Length: 303
Image (cartoon, rainbow, N blue to C red; front, side):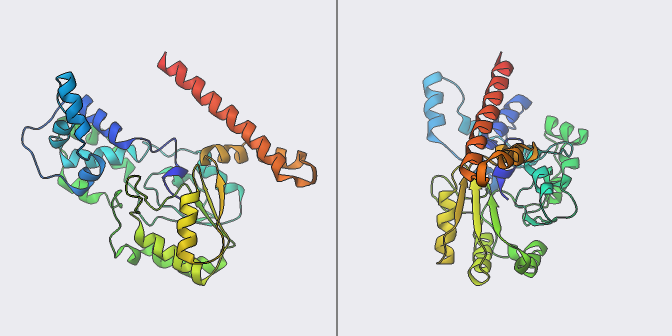
């Protein structure tokens, strides 16, 4: 599972959210520090900010980014990757409708903590300490820019950066091969292996190579679920050098609601001869209903 599995509860435009939070905080140190790899990844220099500043006679976002402390970027990112408390969301509750499974969860959020214990949940990229980053002490530290360096060191999770070559030495990666033979199929949900939009390269190279090696030598049916699953499926097919990877183009949060609400079971029972095309039509109607409700809610919020 990747970031798409937690949308829209967790995720979105992290760069804009962090920049807005820094602006709202209202403090920019005068002293500059060399940008960390994380800050360069999340808040890259963009010449368009300078051009917009010239046009509007304002401060360039690039200048504001340069004066944003690395530690502040770290703590704000960690807060946006988690919720203050564990919630039961359809995106993860849906797994409890099925038999015990192995969930390789690459997300750092705390949504998966509500999953039933019958599942084996592996966290190869670690988990953010939500209790720490959402504490009142952390909020005060953000407000006055007094974030202790030890806090950043205590956040033991993999940031949205290229994976280190030794990441597969961690426990989750060692456990997966031992239970892989027991799997009936592999379903990839909302995960692109950290694909970068501009370059098309992936950040999670080590994870990709491990999974592809397992599939190459211990073949399993593979299904990729996401709004645009074709590129991920093609990458996996190329890596395995055989057999076709199936795709299901949809939003995971909507599909999960379709199952947990009982709408899938109802549509399946009503369809003649278990016609999956009829079930698909029911899903599309359900998706339109969910999206319409979300747009209506957004309009009410804007007003």
